Picture 1 (tube, rainbow, N blue to C red):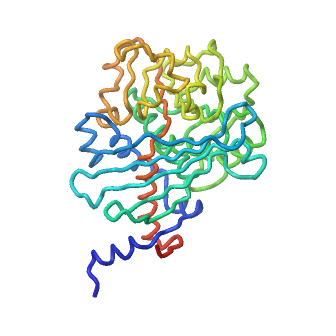
Picture 2 (picture 1 turned 180 degrees about the vertical axis):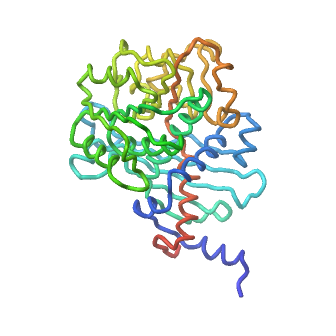
Picture 3 (picture 1 turned 60 degrees about the vertical axis):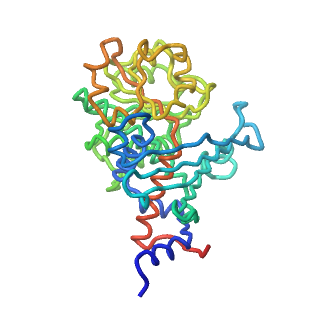
Length: 377
């Protein structure tokens, strides 16, 4: 009879292929939130508490980017990014992880090909042997892990202020918008009474509205009021923002989604995850300047939403790593941040360790459930 170590090596010599459908079956938002709590703490710098809670540290090398073959309609290049990462467990090396995500922006995919705007694939390695143990479809996984970080930031901020999400305003109506609604609601552990969807076009927003309102046990809030607003209706946008508890910006734009003069209520929390270059900006400067700021990684400070703060010190405008705040929630409480800022802003650009750790969980779950297709390597 083969030993357990032999069985493990036999499994490791086979590569598991998981489709988008497989990933959705294996990854609940509740699990995704807990995995990404650990991942975000693993990338915290010089924070022994975060390292202990994460169970190890992450290494995320600089990503490699290649421009796409065509320029999109807004005049910006499409891209393909290669993003490796590793997690080194502090106690048991067998729990270490390695992998790489390949993700693209292809602006013409939805209209011309009926394919996702941001297709992604993740390769997971056996850290000990270096053998590729799985290839995981990464489009939904990317949406879920990105939204999970926003959910964690929202939970942290609102819990520190003893508040609930009464009105969620979402810019965008794609996969990221869908996942953000799920993540924020799951993180807060309560239905959201009102959701406003703000989108450039009506059909996709109406489709998402029906999805929210449908009786789906995994993502249903049948008592929620859902409004749809077009992005060019500035009066309706200001009305929605004036009562927003939380804003989720999930769009691929270069200019702010609302005007500098639009008023946000005191205590509003903003999640911005769509912009990822210095030339992209979702949130206007006046709103950012009112906020205590959380970021997933230092790279977020280079994005258009935050680049105007580049010359300011952390004393002049505090910026905190989300992983550090998750390790010590009281460090981001109002009492420790002064009274200069009456709102909060989480800016996420994503980190490959989220993809690798989430994909590894999915692979483990898939093997438990007998899901996926195995091939000999």
